Image (cartoon, rainbow, N blue to C red; front, side, top):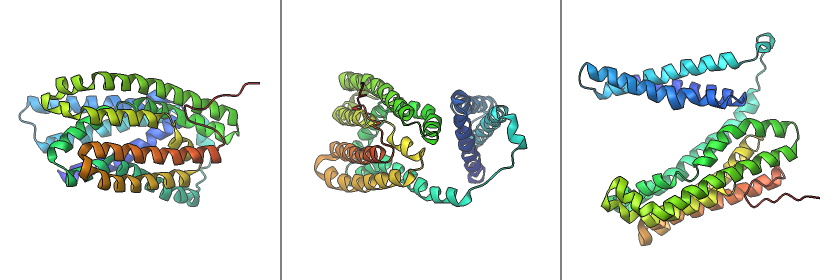
Amino acid sequence: MLLIALFLIPIIALSELRSGALRGFKKIIEAQIPEMLIRPFGFMCLIVIIATFGPVSAQDVVFAHVMAAATAFVVGSFFLFRTLPGQLSNIRPAFEQRRWFRSMLPLTILTGMEVVNGQADIVILGILATSEEVGLYRIAMQGAALVPLGLFSVNMVLGPYIAQSYTAGNQEKLQKFATIACRVSVIIAVLVTIILVGFGDTLLVVLFGEEFGGGYWTLVILATGYLLWVCFGSVILLLTMTGHDNEAMKGALIGAIGNIILNIVLIPPFGMIGAALATITSLLIWNTLLLRSVRKKLRIDSSIFYREVRD
Protein backbone atom coordinates (compact mmCIF):
# COMPACT_ATOMS: atom_id res chain seq x y z
CA MET A 1 0.00 0.00 0.00
CA LEU A 2 2.85 2.36 0.83
CA LEU A 3 4.51 1.65 -2.52
CA ILE A 4 1.29 2.58 -4.30
CA ALA A 5 0.98 5.77 -2.28
CA LEU A 6 4.53 6.80 -3.22
CA PHE A 7 3.33 7.42 -6.78
CA LEU A 8 1.34 10.35 -5.42
CA ILE A 9 4.51 12.31 -4.61
CA PRO A 10 5.71 12.93 -8.20
CA ILE A 11 2.16 13.24 -9.51
CA ILE A 12 1.19 15.93 -7.00
CA ALA A 13 4.52 17.75 -7.43
CA LEU A 14 4.20 17.83 -11.23
CA SER A 15 0.54 18.84 -10.91
CA GLU A 16 1.56 21.86 -8.83
CA LEU A 17 4.09 22.87 -11.47
CA ARG A 18 1.49 22.51 -14.19
CA SER A 19 -1.04 24.51 -12.18
CA GLY A 20 1.51 27.25 -11.59
CA ALA A 21 2.31 27.42 -15.31
CA LEU A 22 -1.38 27.78 -16.18
CA ARG A 23 -1.81 30.53 -13.60
CA GLY A 24 1.22 32.22 -15.12
CA PHE A 25 -0.64 32.25 -18.44
CA LYS A 26 -3.65 33.70 -16.55
CA LYS A 27 -5.68 30.54 -17.14
CA ILE A 28 -7.01 30.47 -13.59
CA ILE A 29 -10.03 28.23 -14.18
CA GLU A 30 -8.07 25.66 -16.19
CA ALA A 31 -5.44 25.62 -13.44
CA GLN A 32 -8.04 24.69 -10.80
CA ILE A 33 -10.31 22.26 -12.67
CA PRO A 34 -8.00 19.19 -12.48
CA GLU A 35 -7.37 19.37 -8.72
CA MET A 36 -10.63 20.92 -7.55
CA LEU A 37 -13.05 19.01 -9.77
CA ILE A 38 -11.61 16.10 -11.73
CA ARG A 39 -9.51 14.62 -8.93
CA PRO A 40 -12.23 14.45 -6.22
CA PHE A 41 -14.92 13.45 -8.71
CA GLY A 42 -12.69 10.73 -10.19
CA PHE A 43 -11.85 9.46 -6.70
CA MET A 44 -15.53 9.18 -5.74
CA CYS A 45 -16.38 7.41 -8.99
CA LEU A 46 -13.61 4.87 -8.48
CA ILE A 47 -14.68 4.19 -4.90
CA VAL A 48 -18.28 3.63 -6.04
CA ILE A 49 -17.12 1.25 -8.79
CA ILE A 50 -14.91 -0.70 -6.37
CA ALA A 51 -17.71 -0.84 -3.78
CA THR A 52 -20.09 -2.47 -6.29
CA PHE A 53 -17.79 -5.50 -6.44
CA GLY A 54 -17.23 -5.88 -2.72
CA PRO A 55 -15.85 -4.23 0.45
CA VAL A 56 -13.51 -1.29 0.00
CA SER A 57 -10.10 -1.83 1.61
CA ALA A 58 -7.47 0.73 2.58
CA GLN A 59 -5.40 -0.38 -0.40
CA ASP A 60 -8.36 0.25 -2.68
CA VAL A 61 -8.69 3.80 -1.33
CA VAL A 62 -5.00 4.52 -1.91
CA PHE A 63 -5.21 3.07 -5.41
CA ALA A 64 -8.24 5.24 -6.15
CA HIS A 65 -6.35 8.32 -4.93
CA VAL A 66 -3.40 7.56 -7.22
CA MET A 67 -5.57 6.91 -10.27
CA ALA A 68 -7.68 10.02 -9.68
CA ALA A 69 -4.56 12.16 -9.25
CA ALA A 70 -3.02 10.69 -12.40
CA THR A 71 -6.19 11.38 -14.37
CA ALA A 72 -6.28 14.96 -13.12
CA PHE A 73 -2.63 15.38 -14.09
CA VAL A 74 -3.27 14.15 -17.64
CA VAL A 75 -6.22 16.50 -18.08
CA GLY A 76 -4.23 19.40 -16.62
CA SER A 77 -1.32 18.64 -18.96
CA PHE A 78 -3.73 18.77 -21.91
CA PHE A 79 -4.90 22.20 -20.74
CA LEU A 80 -1.30 23.37 -20.48
CA PHE A 81 -0.21 22.11 -23.90
CA ARG A 82 -3.28 23.69 -25.45
CA THR A 83 -2.39 27.00 -23.77
CA LEU A 84 1.31 27.12 -24.69
CA PRO A 85 2.03 29.65 -27.45
CA GLY A 86 3.11 28.12 -30.75
CA GLN A 87 6.24 30.29 -30.80
CA LEU A 88 7.72 28.26 -27.95
CA SER A 89 8.53 25.40 -30.32
CA ASN A 90 11.08 27.62 -32.08
CA ILE A 91 12.66 29.02 -28.92
CA ARG A 92 15.74 27.46 -27.40
CA PRO A 93 15.25 27.06 -23.63
CA ALA A 94 17.56 28.89 -21.26
CA PHE A 95 18.04 27.71 -17.69
CA GLU A 96 19.11 29.80 -14.70
CA GLN A 97 19.96 27.01 -12.28
CA ARG A 98 22.00 29.13 -9.87
CA ARG A 99 19.27 31.72 -9.54
CA TRP A 100 16.63 29.02 -9.07
CA PHE A 101 18.67 27.21 -6.45
CA ARG A 102 19.24 30.48 -4.59
CA SER A 103 15.47 30.92 -4.45
CA MET A 104 14.83 27.34 -3.37
CA LEU A 105 16.23 27.71 0.14
CA PRO A 106 14.18 30.72 1.29
CA LEU A 107 11.04 29.39 -0.38
CA THR A 108 11.54 25.97 1.23
CA ILE A 109 12.07 27.55 4.65
CA LEU A 110 9.06 29.81 4.06
CA THR A 111 6.85 26.83 3.26
CA GLY A 112 8.15 24.95 6.29
CA MET A 113 7.52 27.89 8.60
CA GLU A 114 3.97 28.22 7.24
CA VAL A 115 3.40 24.57 8.19
CA VAL A 116 4.85 25.23 11.66
CA ASN A 117 2.61 28.28 12.10
CA GLY A 118 -0.39 26.22 11.05
CA GLN A 119 0.28 23.20 13.26
CA ALA A 120 2.31 24.37 16.29
CA ASP A 121 -0.76 25.27 18.33
CA ILE A 122 -2.40 21.87 17.79
CA VAL A 123 0.79 19.92 18.60
CA ILE A 124 1.68 21.93 21.73
CA LEU A 125 -1.94 21.93 22.90
CA GLY A 126 -1.95 18.15 22.55
CA ILE A 127 1.14 17.94 24.77
CA LEU A 128 0.19 20.50 27.43
CA ALA A 129 -3.62 20.23 27.55
CA THR A 130 -6.34 17.60 27.44
CA SER A 131 -7.54 15.70 24.39
CA GLU A 132 -10.99 17.28 24.84
CA GLU A 133 -9.50 20.75 24.43
CA VAL A 134 -7.61 19.61 21.34
CA GLY A 135 -10.86 18.41 19.78
CA LEU A 136 -12.69 21.64 20.57
CA TYR A 137 -9.78 23.73 19.33
CA ARG A 138 -9.50 21.77 16.10
CA ILE A 139 -13.15 22.36 15.27
CA ALA A 140 -12.90 26.07 16.13
CA MET A 141 -9.79 26.42 13.98
CA GLN A 142 -11.48 24.77 11.00
CA GLY A 143 -14.44 27.11 11.35
CA ALA A 144 -12.22 30.20 11.61
CA ALA A 145 -10.28 29.05 8.55
CA LEU A 146 -13.27 30.15 6.47
CA VAL A 147 -12.39 33.80 7.21
CA PRO A 148 -9.26 34.05 4.98
CA LEU A 149 -10.72 31.99 2.12
CA GLY A 150 -11.30 35.18 0.13
CA LEU A 151 -7.61 36.09 0.48
CA PHE A 152 -6.52 32.64 -0.66
CA SER A 153 -8.88 32.79 -3.65
CA VAL A 154 -7.69 36.25 -4.66
CA ASN A 155 -4.06 35.16 -4.40
CA MET A 156 -4.72 32.36 -6.89
CA VAL A 157 -5.55 35.00 -9.48
CA LEU A 158 -3.23 37.80 -8.42
CA GLY A 159 0.21 36.23 -8.85
CA PRO A 160 0.76 36.68 -12.60
CA TYR A 161 -0.46 40.28 -12.48
CA ILE A 162 1.94 41.15 -9.67
CA ALA A 163 4.89 39.66 -11.54
CA GLN A 164 3.92 41.39 -14.79
CA SER A 165 3.44 44.81 -13.17
CA TYR A 166 6.67 44.56 -11.17
CA THR A 167 8.72 43.45 -14.20
CA ALA A 168 7.31 46.33 -16.23
CA GLY A 169 8.14 48.76 -13.43
CA ASN A 170 4.51 49.85 -13.21
CA GLN A 171 4.29 50.70 -9.53
CA GLU A 172 0.91 52.38 -9.88
CA LYS A 173 -0.61 49.23 -11.35
CA LEU A 174 1.04 47.10 -8.67
CA GLN A 175 -0.52 49.28 -5.97
CA LYS A 176 -3.90 49.07 -7.70
CA PHE A 177 -3.86 45.26 -7.83
CA ALA A 178 -2.75 45.02 -4.19
CA THR A 179 -5.45 47.43 -3.02
CA ILE A 180 -8.30 45.79 -4.95
CA ALA A 181 -7.23 42.32 -3.78
CA CYS A 182 -7.09 43.44 -0.15
CA ARG A 183 -10.47 45.16 -0.23
CA VAL A 184 -12.21 42.17 -1.84
CA SER A 185 -10.60 39.81 0.68
CA VAL A 186 -11.58 42.00 3.64
CA ILE A 187 -15.21 42.28 2.50
CA ILE A 188 -15.50 38.48 2.33
CA ALA A 189 -13.66 38.07 5.65
CA VAL A 190 -15.92 40.59 7.41
CA LEU A 191 -19.07 38.79 6.22
CA VAL A 192 -17.77 35.40 7.36
CA THR A 193 -16.59 36.82 10.70
CA ILE A 194 -20.00 38.37 11.38
CA ILE A 195 -21.66 34.99 10.80
CA LEU A 196 -19.16 33.12 13.00
CA VAL A 197 -19.28 35.65 15.84
CA GLY A 198 -23.05 36.08 15.69
CA PHE A 199 -24.08 32.46 15.18
CA GLY A 200 -20.93 30.48 15.95
CA ASP A 201 -22.23 28.91 19.17
CA THR A 202 -25.38 27.71 17.44
CA LEU A 203 -23.46 26.40 14.43
CA LEU A 204 -21.03 24.44 16.61
CA VAL A 205 -23.88 22.76 18.50
CA VAL A 206 -25.97 22.02 15.41
CA LEU A 207 -23.11 20.74 13.26
CA PHE A 208 -21.00 18.90 15.84
CA GLY A 209 -23.04 18.40 18.99
CA GLU A 210 -23.78 20.03 22.32
CA GLU A 211 -20.34 19.31 23.74
CA PHE A 212 -18.64 21.40 21.04
CA GLY A 213 -20.40 24.59 22.09
CA GLY A 214 -17.53 25.16 24.52
CA GLY A 215 -15.28 26.11 21.62
CA TYR A 216 -17.24 29.28 20.82
CA TRP A 217 -14.90 31.84 22.38
CA THR A 218 -11.88 30.14 20.81
CA LEU A 219 -13.69 30.42 17.48
CA VAL A 220 -14.36 34.13 18.10
CA ILE A 221 -10.70 34.84 18.92
CA LEU A 222 -9.42 32.95 15.89
CA ALA A 223 -11.99 34.44 13.50
CA THR A 224 -11.29 37.98 14.70
CA GLY A 225 -7.55 37.42 14.46
CA TYR A 226 -7.84 36.00 10.95
CA LEU A 227 -9.89 39.04 9.96
CA LEU A 228 -7.06 41.29 11.14
CA TRP A 229 -4.61 39.09 9.23
CA VAL A 230 -6.57 39.58 6.00
CA CYS A 231 -6.35 43.36 6.51
CA PHE A 232 -2.61 43.17 5.79
CA GLY A 233 -3.30 42.05 2.22
CA SER A 234 -1.30 39.68 0.02
CA VAL A 235 2.05 40.40 1.66
CA ILE A 236 3.65 36.97 1.15
CA LEU A 237 2.58 36.78 -2.48
CA LEU A 238 3.84 40.30 -3.20
CA LEU A 239 7.27 39.52 -1.77
CA THR A 240 7.71 36.10 -3.37
CA MET A 241 6.44 37.17 -6.79
CA THR A 242 8.84 40.12 -6.90
CA GLY A 243 12.02 38.28 -5.94
CA HIS A 244 12.08 39.25 -2.26
CA ASP A 245 11.93 35.68 -1.00
CA ASN A 246 14.42 36.33 1.81
CA GLU A 247 12.19 39.02 3.32
CA ALA A 248 9.21 36.66 3.32
CA MET A 249 11.35 33.90 4.84
CA LYS A 250 12.65 36.11 7.66
CA GLY A 251 9.14 37.20 8.63
CA ALA A 252 7.86 33.62 8.57
CA LEU A 253 10.80 32.39 10.64
CA ILE A 254 10.26 35.04 13.32
CA GLY A 255 6.54 34.29 13.31
CA ALA A 256 7.08 30.55 13.73
CA ILE A 257 9.54 30.98 16.61
CA GLY A 258 7.18 33.43 18.30
CA ASN A 259 4.27 31.06 17.76
CA ILE A 260 6.05 28.19 19.50
CA ILE A 261 7.21 30.32 22.43
CA LEU A 262 3.82 31.96 22.96
CA ASN A 263 1.99 28.62 22.82
CA ILE A 264 4.33 27.13 25.42
CA VAL A 265 3.80 30.16 27.68
CA LEU A 266 0.04 30.68 27.24
CA ILE A 267 -1.39 27.16 26.96
CA PRO A 268 -0.67 25.96 30.55
CA PRO A 269 -2.60 28.81 32.23
CA PHE A 270 -5.28 29.41 29.57
CA GLY A 271 -5.66 26.16 27.64
CA MET A 272 -7.14 26.42 24.15
CA ILE A 273 -7.84 30.14 24.66
CA GLY A 274 -4.11 30.58 25.19
CA ALA A 275 -3.39 28.61 22.02
CA ALA A 276 -5.72 30.87 20.04
CA LEU A 277 -4.16 34.04 21.48
CA ALA A 278 -0.65 32.74 20.79
CA THR A 279 -1.46 31.82 17.21
CA ILE A 280 -3.13 35.13 16.41
CA THR A 281 -0.44 37.22 18.13
CA SER A 282 2.39 35.51 16.24
CA LEU A 283 0.41 35.75 12.98
CA LEU A 284 -0.06 39.50 13.41
CA ILE A 285 3.61 40.02 14.30
CA TRP A 286 4.63 38.01 11.25
CA ASN A 287 2.39 39.98 8.90
CA THR A 288 3.41 43.31 10.41
CA LEU A 289 7.01 42.48 9.52
CA LEU A 290 6.01 41.41 6.02
CA LEU A 291 3.94 44.55 5.46
CA ARG A 292 6.92 46.61 6.54
CA SER A 293 9.05 44.77 3.96
CA VAL A 294 6.45 45.35 1.23
CA ARG A 295 6.42 49.08 1.97
CA LYS A 296 10.21 49.26 2.05
CA LYS A 297 11.06 47.04 -0.94
CA LEU A 298 8.11 47.68 -3.26
CA ARG A 299 7.13 51.14 -2.02
CA ILE A 300 3.45 50.24 -1.97
CA ASP A 301 0.93 49.58 0.79
CA SER A 302 -0.93 46.29 0.48
CA SER A 303 -3.05 46.79 3.60
CA ILE A 304 -6.66 47.88 3.93
CA PHE A 305 -5.42 51.11 5.49
CA TYR A 306 -3.97 52.41 2.21
CA ARG A 307 -5.64 55.55 0.98
CA GLU A 308 -5.06 56.93 -2.49
CA VAL A 309 -3.94 60.54 -2.56
CA ARG A 310 -5.74 62.47 -5.28
CA ASP A 311 -4.56 65.76 -6.71
